[in-house]
Image (cartoon, rainbow, N blue to C red):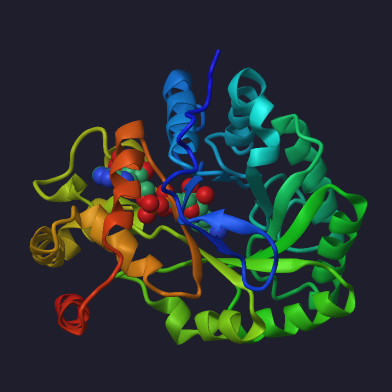
Length: 328
Ligand SMILES: NC(=O)c1ccc[n+]([C@@H]2O[C@H](COP(=O)([O-])OP(=O)(O)OC[C@H]3O[C@@H](n4cnc5c(N)ncnc54)[C@H](OP(=O)(O)O)[C@@H]3O)[C@@H](O)[C@H]2O)c1
């Protein structure tokens, strides 16, 4: 039977989600890839226990993670039942709804109908009574913001989620949503958005500044640009990499296009005494508004390496300028 490491809280730092009382680990683990039908179950368990032993208390899911959609939640439910259940109160488990999940007009976007039904399905798949954070996964141009936020508030009131979050919102929309949720006394505490050395979108769409002024947390997804900002693709495209095993989101063309930049960034990381993955993560975490970096992994060793980023999270002005110059 799994016994969590006794040293699991000795070195991981935890930051509060904005001004809320909820703290998240510097590194969190996401189950978007490698937890579906194409994954090996023993490896999934090993990744979760390796993470928890290192102080990673936060596991992030969504209704549609697979393949097939829903399978990552089912597999996580099995991991909970077999391994992590005794530690439920030490874990922050999140899920989301907002992308296509089932056929017809009620399985997508942001209606009250969709969000409430989807969370019920997610809880069933994971065998949980509640999730810690429930996110609306993406902005919905067709549903009034009041309705979507009303659904989040209702979900939290029902006890099926402890906190609400928003994902992929821009700064202006997040501020409007935040005002509605405040009126509804709903504990909206965190944003989940993409940010990396290669993708500065949230500094351009106002989200990072808005999170600071609204005193909300920010958890960053794809901080490694899905593996591009690691040593994975330094010498071509390995057969067991995400590009080869699931080329839907990260494609070979992107790897080829970024090759020269990746090599230059890798040199800089070596000068800093870090791996490229560690430098990419510490570059994100250096921002005080960032609560946690949300990584994906295909094996436990990657998680161990990535947590090693905590040994050096400060950058000189010259290093920051060099990174900007490389990716210009
Ligand atoms: N809210 C949203 O819309 C949204 C969207 C996307 C993701 N997310 C969340 O964010 C999480 C992370 O996203 P992501 O998987 O794109 O993050 P990522 O950390 O940028 O990429 C993870 C991938 O990089 C590779 N990798 C990680 N560490 C490595 C290392 N040390 N050395 C070499 N390769 C390494 C692995 O790919 P290989 O398979 O090639 O080994 C791994 O699967 C997801 O699981 C999900 O929870 C949310």
